[in-house]
Length: 309
Image 1 (cartoon, rainbow, N blue to C red):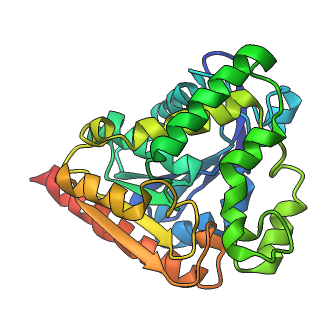
Image 2: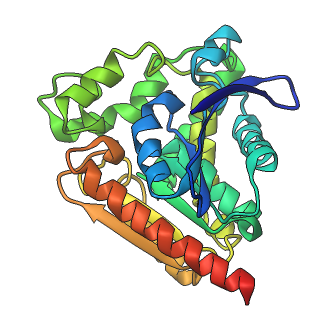
């Protein structure tokens, strides 16, 4: 396990964790979700390393301890922050990717990043995995984005808005009332919820700029036009909890699956009963990890055979 500090072209710094494997069959780049950090995925990354993958994890822009050091925690620049995250991820691939088949995996907000990489860099990838993927947010998302844009004009992009944070995400907990915490929707395992709530590098009130980019990316990446940019030959896997309010919000899982089917993209959906948003940390995590690993093995083998032929 090797942790290094990586600096992007604009000077922004992040931590990158590399977990190598002894006899690699492929690479996997993991991108975490909104307002968390890469260390929460080390256990899962260790599993992937054990089954033959070199794993790379990083803190996304605006997240993790170095974001606090750079006074950018929970903030992204409106109209460009998500695009900067995509460019960041591409620079990581440029730096660390080798000739082995490469899979990108993202959780939630990170799944939007992974899906955008598939749309832009499909020729370089063997597969895309979207864990707890947000669907298109529909008219609610459009209204929310407009309202945030308007608020930025008056308050500024760095204003920390509890109102908009609750407006966009507060409804996720409604299904699980009476709830012990505001984060019960992330997992059915109380210990996992407590670990998130008590982690100093998780949560907090995002800025209007950050919320703007979450809303903008949710609308853009999941649009019909963007989905048609995804190569038909690049397989994508959705990993979904049946009780995840994020996946079933907006147009929902059915809508996003239908769009991929219309675009004739090779899509696999794995759904797990009684699982909420953080499905990699749910009660059935071992089954989820094994199923993801099996799909990754099959995908990189297909990529290798295709490359040889």
